[in-house]
Image (cartoon, rainbow, N blue to C red):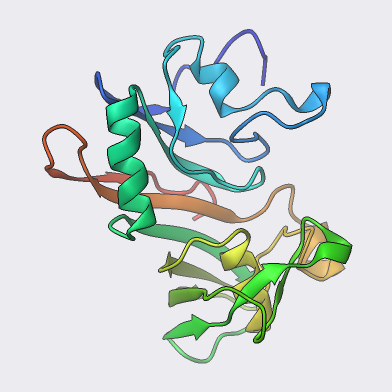
Length: 214
């Protein structure tokens, strides 16, 4: 992606209070510490929407819907919705293996794996609560597509939870086995649906962006 030319087709919705983009895989949400990691959603969006403020983040390798505020009042309203779990999110993924059940619920507490950062780990003593609902879409020969609905929003939650089920997300260079990474150019995880209340009108909004890999 050219740093001086933002994408022309990634804005899904915009008004005077907020803007919603479809983040490509491989792009940071916010600037990193090193100079080579300054390119991100914000640096691109500030070229067309200089007042944009981050409300939530996606992993660099995850693609999909990101919501940004365009003023402080909207930022506060949207941030509170995320904090109070008033935002509904759906992700779509391709995962390794054969999944016998059609749906399920994962409740495994998580924390940072300090010796192997940025990896996270399951920890029943010191971990923070993390819950994910999942529903299988299609089972293929040796992988399947799945809809993931995170109840909490921990870093790497969906990646670690699916790994803990024994079905890592394909292309995941942190949690998947080498075979599940080798044949994929990116992490097969996409934020495909976001539902929230508009910060000004308070009407519920539902934004959808289907993944390219389904």
